[in-house]
Length: 172
Image (cartoon, rainbow, N blue to C red; front, side, top):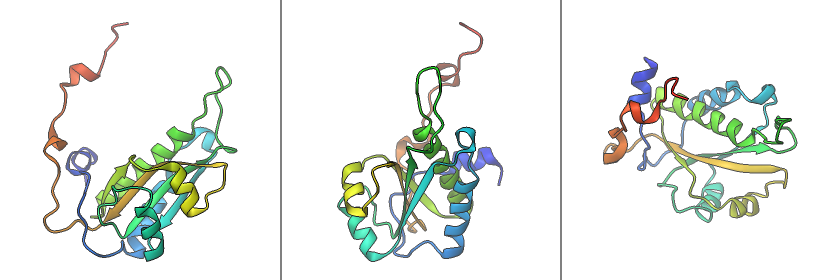
């Protein structure tokens, strides 16, 4: 599929069929995250796959934005492995995890798996429920599955600001 077409048609799916993402589809999605670029290629990402009934019940304790998913990915980074900018100590862990999440989200869309990038979750609850080590920092939750037959994008999905409002060309 043409990338711009994929980017335009992909939307946050908030209603899924009652089935897990197949193993082969999940492998493709995880592979896309594995191939994602990270700062100095340190690959600090850690992805927690949640698909057992027990894991999904724990997930529901951490967010109300699960949309009935049967498969979810919590994308984290290992703070001990991130690249650090020497000028100000800024780390790229959040950016790295976000790039990984984006790659997986777009691969999912390209193979017919819907997803929603959820930021509305309690990181402390995730750490507690899933026994996540202190050096691993949760960043993004990607709930996913096969879209329900009546799933559709929200009205705001295709409303964009004018390009001139978000792009500045040589006017500094």
